[in-house]
Length: 248
Image (cartoon, rainbow, N blue to C red; front, side, top):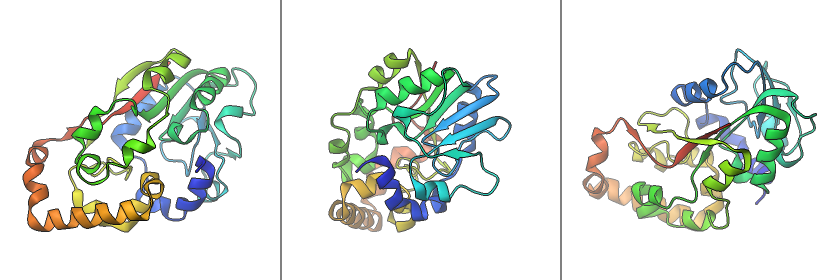
């Protein structure tokens, strides 16, 4: 399902659980450096847009554009692989948790590089299977996630396309942005349908896999099996689960 169509489907409740996580935002905004004009590609409802800079947003989903709050940056209906801007129109271009939805991620990143002097991308290392084994949700309950990653460009390939460096981004245990891995130390959150509806993974694996995973997780939480398997997590303040910054 293409990104715009997917978010026209799941976007109705997106803002209930998806919002800016300040510690991750600080990393993204620091990477923008002294940029004053910023293009936010795949901007969604506007999370992570820096409030102290001149931001222009690009978002293909009509529903997500409609959910941008009053006073948000102006938003253009366009896709990443065909940005309607002149070369070097912006000091920086950013993309947050969106590249995996683009039809052609390499083309989209090159477009960002064309229109901006600096590029900052918050994404996931889908080519590294290690995080799927470290993350109990994919390891024990939702192995179908591996199928969703097949055929995606590697993180190294994305970085090479725009000559970017790669920086790891640990996820704090109390992360306020409800993306897929955010509740790694709060398993009960995944039983909440509102949390799941704000994450595209659940829509993509389908209702049968979702219902099976939720049922098994609930049983393991009730029996204490989850706590026994994952007791080492309780002492961690942050987890390394494959989230990365690409910075040019």
